[in-house]
Length: 492
Image 1 (cartoon, rainbow, N blue to C red):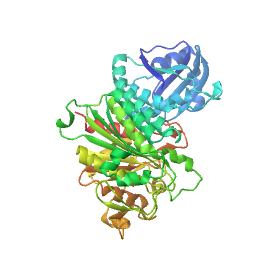
Image 2 (cartoon, one colour):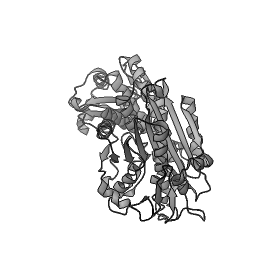
Image 3 (cartoon, helix red, strand yellow):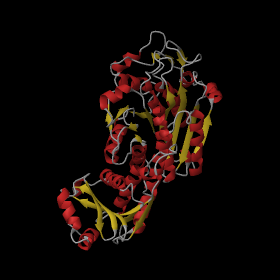
């Protein structure tokens, strides 16, 4: 992660300089000083590039003079539309343009200290890179940016604003690391061990293995795992940020993640093309782990629990068969029609355990659950299903603010008929029509009356192209969304 620092405004004598410029803004401060020092080179470059500070526009000027190697101007757009999402994106654009610079400074202009910290967050998020397995990369191909200094008048206030955001950035990086790992490295046991490291942040971590899960009666989860030599785990992470435990206001907030560390589809095996992508079928669990790290890292004043069900779905002589009937932890029975509809089986047992054990204020689960969600929404929004209008509205609003957007889908008894079984309480798949909805209807049967939201992140967990704050690869979608949800609505 690049190092972030804050300093008083002063024109640097070397290196790279970033100018953050709003639409319609006139030259002032360091911008004006630099233009005068370079004999009007900056103004001429802006005119030639037709750069006027529009949102998302970037103008790079190489060796403009005054000892600088590069000047990067990033547009902030209209002042009335400036929010954390725009500021994060601006930082991301800057980091992308500076990847070959060793260090750089950012002239934040008229931004407030907290706004400057949001720019820093975007830069850190975009500068992320998973390169632990690259052994022969040429030095010139490696990004060099190691430090970014933001120039602000109130450095102490900016540092204070950055401190909690740094915790969020570290949570995002952890989530991306987990999702990026190859499946021969990150099996259920290894992921559980990495969760255990959150104890260093003050998170209480409990790991349940196959024996404990068998004694509890996790028949749905264990059914998915039985075809693999890599044994399953469930990890329970608790952050007591109020200092009062469950006695404070009674109930923690709860987050549950699907953690299929590799999904072949089991006996209902997937096509070979693209199966390598199924290493990130644990992205929901990766988000929950990253979120718990973020909450603990910024010392959020909330009691939160995060639970992840970790399995590997493999075909073998011991694998679950289409036609099997399993008994879930709730006591409800499930006819397994398709072994590739396994994530909902994992969530069924973990959700029921969560509400029985912790009686949470709400439960939010995240899962790369259905290909149908990608058909419906592409790669721009996550699908959201909820039994609670207030919770759904909060998620939708916060998603727009941080740029991790969700779109609500219906839940209805009519769709519930799609998963009716002839020999068990339900079947695990309802066919192609409304595939994401019938999956959510299945999960809802393990929720009871607890306020709940299900986020199907199949289309947004991994990106095949760069975005302002998200380099190509694992996105950690949901960490910032849920951290902001907690910060705005559930902290004491």
